[in-house]
Length: 500
Ligand SMILES: NC(=O)C1=CN([C@@H]2O[C@H](COP(=O)(O)OP(=O)(O)OC[C@H]3O[C@@H](n4cnc5c(N)ncnc54)[C@H](OP(=O)(O)O)[C@@H]3O)[C@@H](O)[C@H]2O)[C@H](O)CC1
Ligand SMILES: [K+]
Image (cartoon, rainbow, N blue to C red; front, top):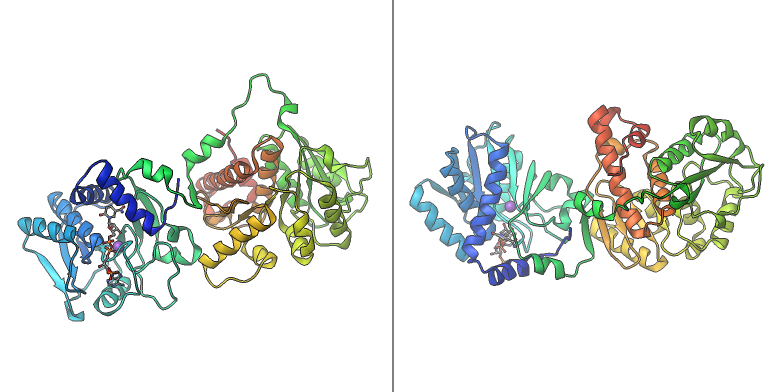
């Protein structure tokens, strides 16, 4: 699913009006109805609902929502925040329609007009939407502060008032802090950025049938991966396939004290459909790996403690494998750096690079140029910062991320809530799955195993990254259902992987 910018959203609105065709006021009615359907599914008609409307189209939505909720017999109190002399046409139209069914519309011009809000009430925020053009001030700001102080449940219409759709807010900006945001048709870039968490709450998209062809043709670097997008990427298995059809992956993982990382990555790789798996671990990991993961072949490194790439048994030529994953638990020993350097010198096919392999790259940045094209790097924000530079805000971080992926022609999975996957073409795919339970040791090793398995099976590297990150998050969501987000472990994530 695409994420469009404010100008495109406005143009999409116009395109829908022209091509459907539909009168603007009827489109507003459709949006209001979609909101009210969601609202009625979540809150009973016994709860007092205070709705705060601005003077633009977001406020117009609010007035239409108020009328529709009155029809459904919700006890509604309607407040219009009169911050300017002019209202939008569709606001005025809905104002007139509302006045036909109720006299009960109050106006907030001064602070003392702001009502007290109690804890068992619901607030609907329709003050400002995607038309925000400057920081909130005056009576708008005071109303938002009063709503934020109140103990009520707050639901934002389209986007929290005061939050920019696709540009950074200043730290001093006053913005609604909703429990829910019900947004129209498309996700907004602001929703997937970490600093905005409290200004978004639990967000959901409602479909208002905006012009599909416009959306299909609109250029954007930003995408949001949902289940239906991920499902399209999944390769079907041929009935006559054999284990040779799904590649042979090599994992360079583990060091003394961190063989668990090797086990997790190996298990995840096997649970993600790799044909054959060989795991190279330091000598000390041999018995552990062979016992814990009998499905994998094991190459014990000559060195007992760290990886050097030299094996006890036979010399492993990484080029003979379909792909390589490197990093989980490997540490940063000088011998391991030599191994990484040699790997990057000789290998020309995409690999997966994680954890200490990334830290070795940031300490030896001349190696970045040597990364095979379309390799997948999986840093968390601290690792990414070490590879690049500090950022001031989430938008600047996205710019740095895109530039890095373009410059080195690699795919970067920046891990976190809504992991951001940057491609060498400059696109960013935000992931929709996952939960705070994934913030536990070993889940990154699991992701490396998954991505390595997908590359081994011949997935296009961008598709491997998008699908792998989605499936990892989904497994995390299943694990959280079973164990709860606090009790779940990385092993639970491996056990929850499913590919259907
Ligand atoms: N496109 C869609 O999918 C649909 C959107 N709908 C709803 O429409 C809003 C966007 O409506 P719009 O009128 O463009 O914007 P707002 O309601 O946010 O308000 C704009 C007016 O507010 C002024 N403004 C901007 N910032 C501030 C501020 N900080 N304080 C006070 N006033 C502010 C702005 O003034 P300008 O000087 O910038 O012109 C405007 O006067 C969208 O969010 C949806 O809720 C639909 O109804 C259906 C389809
Ligand atoms: K709003």
